[in-house]
Amino acid sequence: MTKNRIVNTDETLGYQSSFIETELTGFDLLIQPLLNKGMAFTQDERDLFQLHGLLPADQGTMESQLERRLKALDGFTTDFQRYAFMRDLQDTNETLFYALLVRNMAKLLPIVYTPTVGEGCQRFSEIWRKPRGLFLSYTNRSRIRTILANPRYDKVRIIVVSDGERILGLGDQGAGGMGIPIGKLALYTACAGIHPELTLPITLDVGTNNTARLQDPLYIGWRHARIRGQEYDDFIEEFIQAVIERWPNVLLQWEDFAGHNASRLLERYRDKLCTFNDDIQGTAAVATGTLMAAIKVTGTHFKDQRIAVFGCGSAGCGISNFLMRAMIDGGLSEDEARSRFYLVDKDGLLIEGMPDITPAQMPFLQKMRALTQWSIQEAKNVSLLDVVRNASPTCLIGVSGQSGAFTADIIEAMAERVERPVIFPLSNPTSRCEATPDDLLMWTRGKALVGTGSPFPPVHYEGKAIAVDQTNNSYTFPGVGLGVLATQARRITDSMLMASAKILADLSPYVRNQSQRLLPCVEDLRSVAQSVALAVGQQAMIDGVATPLSDIELKQSIQKLIWEPIYRPYHLRRDVGDCV
Image (cartoon, rainbow, N blue to C red; front, top):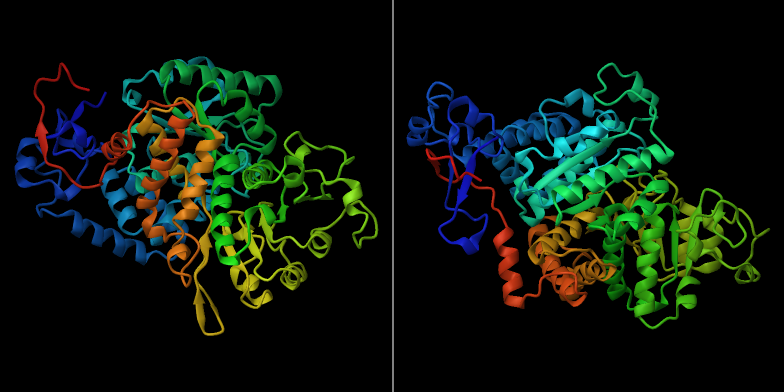
């Protein structure tokens, strides 16, 4: 067990500590990612901790280390090489990793997160070096409680878990899906300031049906077809019960579970522990917040929107549910709100009477009588183009994972019917995006308001550089987690997530300057997370699921949790009996 202690000059400052105590010395100290400072250890610390000879003679600084790492990053020719470099840095010197990320958010967020994390998951077995997080394999199902019991996890407050079956738009990556929990938790720290020792990435390795992974001699996971049915459910239940026993107040975030599992697992466990599914609820919150910001530009009302969603899995249905609730809040009846949604899947528009409709899709089936006036050949296999021509949607959202699905004829038809079409091709990674911002702005003659799941550079159109808003969950989930921890919330309610959407819309730079973008710049994600945390924490108290605090106390609780990635002086701890 690593014995170290953060010591504060003021207990209200939490992780903004003045120094760190540890009993580790020499090589044992240098191999701890959260303690290693590399060449930035001072001469006094090298004396005290027996580091002479293990480090080069020069005493460096964080600034010189950052400069060296940035030079190395710029020397690589591919983003995957940069991803591998950053993963290695995280496992070697975690403070430096976060300092580099926080100071270069726009440059490095696409490397440690989407879109590069997709290739990182596909090739995770190639670059696995050191343990990070937990791989809970089906073969070790009887050992889950023993594995979780290790004292190194005593402080865990946030878990991100995946079974690797639906990684972004890339499908089943098996154990390689660990890249997603690692990447998500890196954003909890970089964006919300949550200390890394409070976080734990977990992959539930229940096998894979990806033939390429199974045939890869380097594959690090369990070489077995995916466990299904009751065996799978029993394994999930064993995991959840072990988590609740180990950490009764933990926040557990589900990531990249396949649609047939994502919704039902969320419904099964959302009232048993503090949990949410970021693909369903987080994506819905950020899409709602961005649309709320967009209608400030269009000058319309939320209840007057007509929404076409291409892709009717857990993400598409989750977004639709969230938007429908916002419409109801805006004054529509439930039936009126439902009628304004047009969900299109591989078999066309979802219409009453269609076979194989999931429970999540059921509320959004269009009634046959609503199509009687449409100009279509027959009321089956109604295409997205048919929907655009007949329903004139004001907003088009893509979560299909189908590259190029938003074609020129679809977008041009939308622009003919709507003055300022709102178009969100949200599928990740970039290779799965339904359309590029360049094409969308060209096809709409510069009128479209575009939000994408992956980052894109500004589009140059008619002599102007038009910023592309990355409608990404990183705008909401880090702040949601920070608000939950600050209030010790016991559950995550839909109202709390809606609060995150509303505050994101309020933070739109467009509100203050109509020449600006819809969403704050990526460089501002730390301040965004704190605003989201405040709104979520306040809503948690209104909903009765959190510790009552005044606004001042809530702000203090949020600030107490925020950790800054800077090097602190080290003191040698000699009496280790009361270490924590």
